[in-house]
Image (spheres, rainbow, N blue to C red):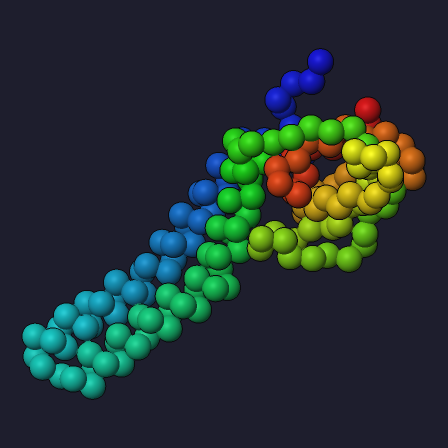
Length: 161
């Protein structure tokens, strides 16, 4: 009998990511509010150059900070929501290999994990899953049977069967 508890993720991980996103949004909002005040003052006193410069700076800060600081956390938050609260599937498959290379899958750094599966006609094929690169997995031997819980192709939990 399996439980819904994941050994890779916990609700506290999601809470921590949400809190970190909130702190980063506040850090981005502070200079934007100051620049917005500059825009308002420059509109009142009709100083077009200051209005233009402040508006451009607000846009640049928002674009720069979104892309470098907030978007990666937002992608990871979506990943955590999917594996913790989304539709997951379970399967038991023999392990083949875990790639050392790190790929970005939906904005989340992942290792590719290959397992052996059999199609409806009994022909074997390799099935690909992605394991979060920030999480540590136990070492599995080739051919070892694994119980994999996954959301789409992203692994929510993996244990020995």
